[in-house]
Amino acid sequence: TNAMDSNPASFPHNNLPIQRWYISQEDLFTDINIWAATQAFTFIIRRSTIGKSGRPTVTYSCNQ
Image (cartoon, rainbow, N blue to C red; front, top):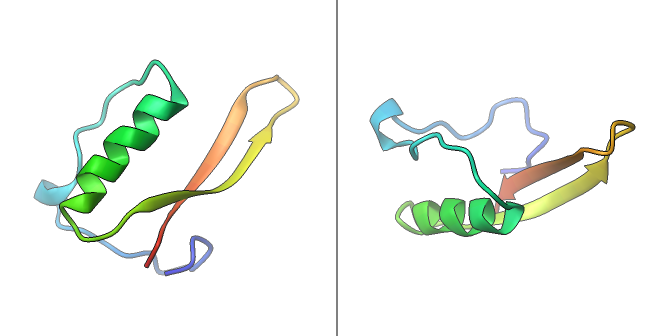
């Protein structure tokens, strides 16, 4: 599935990872890929930009 598709893949609510705050982007990326491995896919960083405020925006996409 392309990250820009209007119909993204859906998962049962009880199958989603726990929402939490991360200290670093690397910690987030590692954790979502550990979870994704249980669903037989992986995440990639599709795009990364720095906004006018200086804060990064990272768009993740699954490999399927």
